[in-house]
Image (cartoon, rainbow, N blue to C red; front, side, top):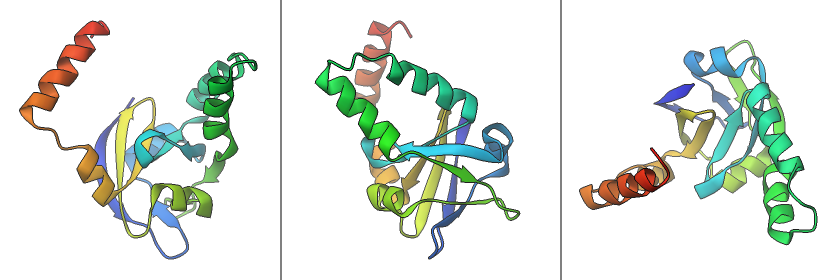
Amino acid sequence: MFMGEYRHSIDAKGRLIVPARFRESLGDVFVVTKGLDGCLWAFADEDWKKLEEKLRALPLSDKEARRFSRFFLAGAGQVEVDKQGRILIPGGLREFAELEKDVTLAGVGSRVEIWNTDRWEGNSSYDDDEVDKMASHMAELGI
C-alpha cells in the first residue's frame, strides 16, 4: 500500500526521482497514465493488470465506458527506473499534468499520484466543512 507525500523537481528532460519507499513497491518497471483531477497515476504491474482487466470487461456498446477506457489506456506507458532512481515521464503525460518543475508524489493506496505541486496544494487542502462532507459521503459508501 502506498502512502505519504514527497516533493521533488522534474528536470528539463522530464526525469523525476521516485522515492525509494515507492520504488520498493512499484518495481523497476511500472505503468504511468493519466489520472483524474489533472494528475498522473503510477501503478505497479500487478495493480495495473487488475485495472486493465476491469476496463476490458466494460461493455464496448457503452459510449462512456469506451471513453473512460480510452482516457486511461491510450496515454499509458511503461517507465523504467534508472540507476539514479529516476523515471522519464513521456511528454504527453507531462503536458497533461502540467509537470514543469515542482512535483509532488503522493501515495494513495493502490497507486502513486504525480502532481504539479501548485495543483496538488489546491486539491489537498480542506476546510472543516469539506472534511465533514467527505466523511459523510464515505459513511454512505460503508467506510
